Amino acid sequence: MDLSQLSDSDLMALKANDLSKMSDAGLMSLKGVQVAQPQPVNQTPEIPQWKSAIVGAGKGIVDPALAIAQYSGGKPAEFSQEVQRRMKPFQEANPMTFGAGQIGGGILTGGALMKGAGMIPSFARANPYIQGAAIGGVSGALTPTEAGTSGMEALQEIPQKAGVGILGGVGGTAVGRGIANVVAPKLSEAAQKLIGEGVNLTPGQMMGGALRKIEDKLTSVPLLGDIIDYSRTKGIEEFNKAAYKRALAPINGVMPKETGRAGVEAVKTQISGAYNTLLPKMTFVPDLPLYDSLSKLDKVVVGLPKPETKMVADNVKAIIQKHMPENGLISGGSYKAIESDLGELASNYAGSKGTDAMIGNAYKQALGQVRQALARSNPEYAEELGNINKAFANFARIRRAGSMANTQEMITPSQLANAVKAADESAGKGATATGNALMQDLTDAGVQVLPSKVPDSGTAGRNALVSALMGAGGASSYSAYPTVTALGAGLAGATALPYAPGVRNLVTTAVGKRPESAKKLADVIRELAPYLAAPAAQKSVGE
Image 1 (cartoon, helix red, strand yellow):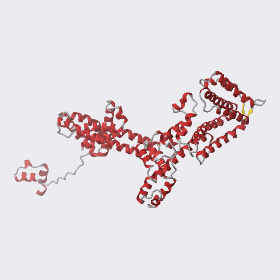
Image 2 (tube, helix red, strand yellow):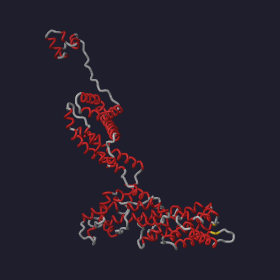
Image 3 (spheres, helix red, strand yellow):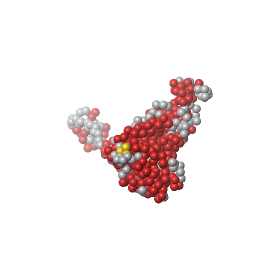
Image 4 (cartoon, one colour):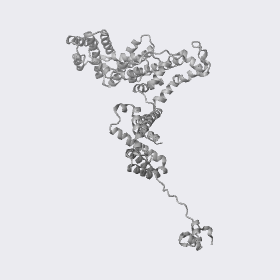
């Protein structure tokens, strides 16, 4: 008999000669039967990921209720411990999935409860950081206490938990919004509009706020200020070309390389060329609708007296008759002369006030009616003619702004905005007042984002910056700033890099031209940032 297989208790029973106290395995060993040792069995069944996620979400949902109940002590605290015990296997089996479910459940409960109960006032909803603080504070206050904590002790811990939760909520909101800005920076509508029109902006112009103020102050820094001014000047140049594009797009014109007076002249030449090419193909036949509209100019120009209405109508008819041949078909060349005569009459009243101003407006309206009659006379060319007229209407505003610029090389957004307003012939400038005047969408954005005057081109500063970028000591010899050290020049060059030629376009593309899907994702992250912060704050309090 091999006694080595007996346990200590069996040996003690055998020594005492009391076989009734021996185990079954020991008795079998005494009879010479070998008992197989039991193999360890994994007692923890495999738990699917989806079950852990569901249980985790349930924990996130019930935790606030359990915390409130636990503050009263007694059975609710015991019930909370039992719930935690039953959920523990699901958490241990799939901790990541369980945690994700818990956060989702916490957001669902905390956010919905607080919004539904009106616990977040309107001013907090407008500020994500206040919202994050509110949600974090409440979530922290509702964090379950440790087992065995009395109701009074739990109540005493509320202020500390709420304070930590507020800090976590604010910090989590900041982190969430920071992530959103990496995914797709939040730009103003004006900045987005200009970028869409082909205007490359500086970082400060794109982001606005504090960054814009810092950038404004940096313009006074030697070298660095020159390169920032250069970038802003390029933005004005691209704004001018965006205006040119508005005028040339209807006729599929070619964008001129020049800006300033040369650019305005290039736009005018293309539009006039398109018109002069089309006119010989058309004839003009004055029809009844034209004469009827001329007799009702006082309905269009509100306040125009009847005698002046008749005078304008008679003069327009006389000009038409003057250029009409015997067959009644006015050629394109003769029609152009009619337009020229009417335009000259209207210009005679430029700058007038009162009734004279209304007379000048009446001649402009009459010219518009004559152009509509030309389109009716040539239906096969009506679309092409309409596009040319659109091009002329946009160019008229550019031309007016160019006259305001005097000797300046380029038009500023404010000058073009004033031209747009001046060309608005609606009653009381109503189109401008409502933001619907022609080209106003472009000028409004330009006025909000771009400088009110054309900055210095910064040629000297650019040359010095190039030297700084090529060699740290290159800019130190720049005679205007002899105290600039090699290190200072290098730092200036690094800071100015986003504004440098060739780089500024890449920066605008990287920041302002993200895919629409990225913008939507960033908006979702910003919206959820205060709620995502709440579970994190709650967890930090618990730890």
